Length: 80
Length: 233
Image (cartoon, helix red, strand yellow):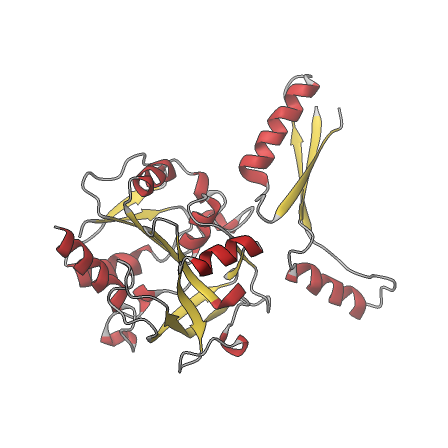
């Protein structure tokens, strides 16, 4: 099974990299960009076909390593 | 003072640290590898040095915080053992949950490598007994992610319990945004845990310990630790 874990900064956490990207987009003349927040995407292959088991494993992966939950949120999608 | 320096792949300040420890305590530290599972018996002080463990992959310190040796470090800290974590070490102990908060990208987005001034907030800890409270010391920093942040409640607790030991300051000891090179909340450069036995700090005291380095302001930290163990013995 294929899965994706998306990690984003919690709202209220200053994101200087997002700000720099936002500035670069503005200087490139890309119009209409109000703000940019940078995050991370993990594409993960899961062995077997146990959907619920996969979600449990991914939650554990996100909590233990992929996200620092002090500053980041995560979202899990098992795409099958 | 029997010290142990933890070496992870990508760490590059371990020899500076070992040199400073030997110079000031008279005893070379044990060097431990990330895959080791035990500290040498009788270890007094564990030091996690600076560098770029695991290439700063994922988040600074994130992978090192989960390395096998860290279980031993965690158990040592839980028993009250002293842990000194510098630079990448500070990031590692935050990721390991030994200290609260996170070190984010410097507010100005630049890697900063230069001397800074620190105000020593307390002298009544094993880490700062070699200084006077309010004393200003000059030591180098070298980091891209040193911008300390934590939620409001954590900051209030750190401040209320006097757990900020070092703060970025002007040469005359004023905490001022102009002298806070990385944007850290409240100018925080170094904090201790609630038991007072784990210190995390971004600056490098080990790089100002002998005349050839230009200054010796970092010596007080190591000399204070040596005194602490001498008195305890």
